[in-house]
Length: 189
Length: 422
Image (cartoon, rainbow over all chains, first blue to last red; front, side):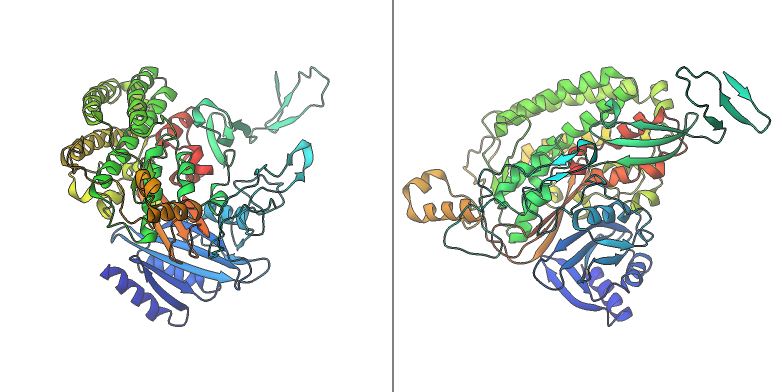
């Protein structure tokens, strides 16, 4: 992991003001970048100077009711030296927008489409930003935290429709971070 | 009938319903829709093709027909409750998914070093058994799509034996849900390893048979050699992993590069291809089956407690903050009862942090990114499906090929839609 530490130091010295946080947990390194506009410079540097050739994963997190609400998480992999780096970047814009990295890592083309589909985060400069898992006509972004688990009822053209799923009083669980004295069934949303 | 004009455009003359004549130019491409329920798309994949004669000009894959919202559901279940959902990801290798998921949760909990060695060995056997099962079906379906039905029948006979082994081990043939956070659900049944060894003997004979049927078969070579070639850089750019990446000559295998489970104690080779065509992907999978068989043999020899667990090695962690205590103790002792209650209702209390763990699944790296805010329910659980990345490369590699090459290329990529769509 020493090579990874060296790489992180190189990145920090190249962009001293942009890396705002550096955390280590279970041997994994997370860097937090402070603004979207310089994301491309950092990504370019990571790929071409530090050898993070593979974009393992790109996903988003909806931090509802906290600011900033939208967070992107990139997982990068350096094949030659076997190390992984996690980048996080946040925004509070409405609608949330980030620059696309699809010209740096082509794998992000579909990943960004999925993030757009599920979270409604837009990617500036994306060549083909369409829904990927849901159908084109679908009006919502289901992975947002304010979208109910059961879904919503919707009437589309050509007889397409959705209805909330019957949850039979469930789900039976406790919300993350909350510790009530006893678990209760959630009211059906 | 075609009426040729001077400016090289063609007009249809025959109009049965008196429809207005459509003018065709010779640049017109044929739009063809393939799927979503086409036998060679191995699931519900739809591909929109533009054809110039039989040559493919452009490709637009459409996925999402099997989207069940697992990531959304995961945010509403405790970590333990999500294990059965992982069976339904890559449903051709459910055991490997089970192992991958619990390893990710254990990494988040920081208990990966405390897992009893016997459970680690059992998990390794499960992963490799799943790899054999998945590769057998991958090869069989690939060969059947190219017209060699015999291979499909041969491999299904072997997969049936794997299902029998799964049934004896987990109680279910298909949806195994075998692993638990902190160990595995139950120990190996008596005599299971003997059956497994016997199966491996028969399997290797079948694999040799498949080898003899295909590897030097001129029809097979003509269908697969130099078809669907993925250059190494393209494979890396599109984040391909697993056999598809290794067939392009990139020796990336997490079992070697970042050893987990007990892979660092075992001897095995990572087969890699040379040019990354369909034939290389076939050869890599064939060899991986043999390597997996060898890994399982080594595990059976080295497993702590022996095949029948004569020395009563534990298979579950003894930290009952995260794992269910033995049922007999729950019924008789207060503390265990409380642990049981807390585990079932709240799930294991994970630290508020984030972790990513990828397992070398048969189809590639199956990764789980878990973001926790404390408590027993993930705030965000992201599944990195290898098949999703495999399919995203189709618009790059298909153009220029013949329509008849599509079944061969799709078969050789060996994706599964349950995992791609989640």
